[in-house]
Image (cartoon, rainbow, N blue to C red; front, side):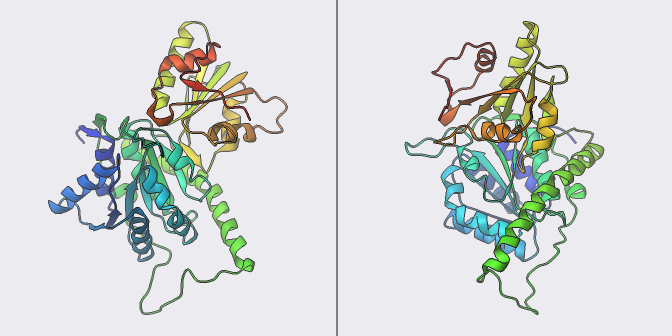
Length: 379
């Protein structure tokens, strides 16, 4: 397949078409709007055989996707920031109704003050709802992740919705070479375990008493745990199909013999890799662990990957106000109880689109923090 020069949003649209999606429902919001604009062009030109449903709000967009998924078809939507927040109620519904919807989230800060630039506050604020969350570093990874997300979401041991998250403007509006392979054979036909049957009607979304509700959430937790094993299989099968290695859980970069490790997620990871290479040239044995799957968090795998380093520097592009960066919280918890755990340092960077350069990572590792660019959050 010939490479195309695509923005992150265009990569999403091409992947949605090539994954055999049948229903797309959306409401526009910057910087995810071009995803649906591109899909609308494909549908109009007859390049995509799908029903495009344009609704009056993001709440309605997710409602339509849930209905489509319960009807037995593959569904998709895209949003950002305040749109994701407006969906919040229906995000819970999508999980508890066990609908394998895939949603692209072009990450953007949440105001006020009004800010359209990138950070991960929008999706991180939804981390406890129950959606699987994947974070991307490049446009090719965005493309690959859409197809892999459907394979994971629709697996009989998972049946959960997935967010494919990528930095707004940094990736959503930046063009990169993307190899748009035909994904239909990889994703296959969507074969739901159950769907709405008008010949045999049942009631849904009704009262669920305490005797059952806790079991419902317990089964969702079990499916998150199962998803990690499914991801390993999907990652392997994707490589066997396309000869392209796209990690789903996390990526290790020069970590094998590292004394210090940087931990990141999303597009800032590219700058972190430059910092790792620079530190290596200066005699510091640095490495990078890039989080791809934040929910479910691969805690045991992360501990194993970082067990031999002396110090870990976690960089969050979001902050849990009153506490610390979310990834920092999670890693510190993962290492709790280990006698030989590394020292873990947490920093918050890049909020509201503030630039994150390789020098910021390098300076943090070498002890030359600039408070204008890095927040050290201590509560």
